[in-house]
Amino acid sequence: MPSSPTVKSGFWRNQLRQWHWISSAVSLMGLLLFSVTGFTLNHAAQIEAEPKVTKIERQVPQTTLAGLASVTANTPLTLLQATAIRGATGVDVRGATVDADEDGIYLTLSAPGVDSTLEISRIDGHAIYERTDRGLIAVLNDLHKGRHSGPVWAMFIDLIAIACVVFSVTGFGLLWLYARGRRITWPLVALGLVLPFILFLLFVHA
Image: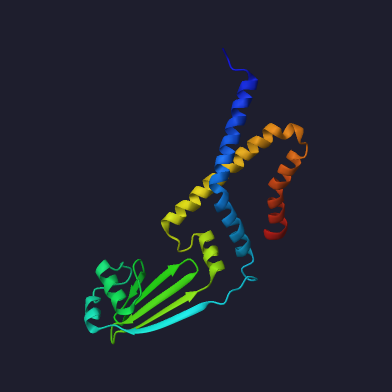
């Protein structure tokens, strides 16, 4: 016996509701985070924080320098090399970007809101570590952009993006089902659709 239109309508209504609340639950905190950081990024010039700079100087023993002789540019440090550098300077350089020449070793360590460099002279073993911490807002802004946040955070951004797409599409489906009793529905949807294009054409593209 074929299903009646009422049964079909009820099935799709239940599916839309279920996926709408599931995607809402999954994306809730991420959507809130990216909304807040979208605002802080848009007002980065007005929300300024004074960077905190830390500078440390150390002397690397010649025995350690000898073990770093094989360090070359654009080649990741081995675990043994990273351990030796940490033992001599106190700086964890695992995952650092490496540059090197005959005069020295130059390591860049970046994280959300933080930029760090470590320079080690091959000549006399003098090491200079400098860390610039740009504050909590900078951390959040970098997380929004996925800057220096690693592959796991990139996957999290993808997950939130997919959940938001599902949330939007199922929300549109629910609007379609309930629009008959709310005449203002489609004018509001149309406004939300065309407003970005109007603003772009009038104030950005021009």
